[in-house]
Amino acid sequence: MEDDTTDDFEPDIERQVRLGDASPISAETTSETHFDTERAARKSVSIAAERVQNILDDNGYLQGNIEVGNGTVDLDDPDFEMDDQPRSSEFNRDLDLGVMVFYLYHYSKEGELLSKPEITFDELLDAVPRSAEIQLNFEENEYTAILPVVCYKEWEKAQSD
Image (cartoon, rainbow, N blue to C red; front, side, top):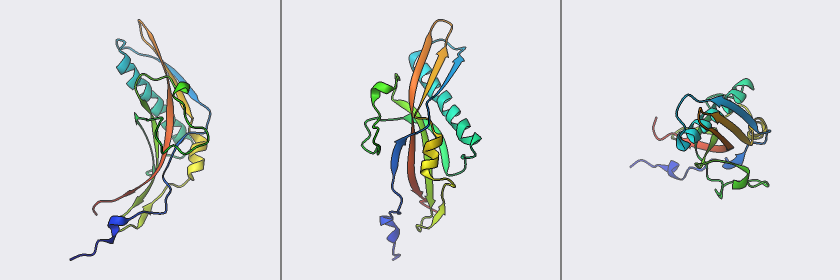
């Protein structure tokens, strides 16, 4: 029988969930589609994620260990570790969506560090905006969302070779 001691693997990486520290960003665009609140909310977060990705790319920070996406962001998440706890009132969003920036350490199945970001988590936070205000102009309506930009410091362990 093989001794699998990697089941209790826990690297010396403190997981963190933080809003970016840089100034908020904004963007305005026109939409060709018919106005629908859910569609507008999803399009807004997609545009915001693209803007954040461009900021990180311009700074040379995008690499295999830093990824930008979007999804559900719970501002009441107990894992938020910061003096300035986010408040729902500072954001304007119809769905609980936000931009997600992942700062990842990758480990092998055996627990060996394979790769890590080339910058510190603090350097990432300094480059990432706290929020993104996106205004969509539709023919018959206007939609504005102020979305949180959340950074996640995490690690991943390979499940197989």
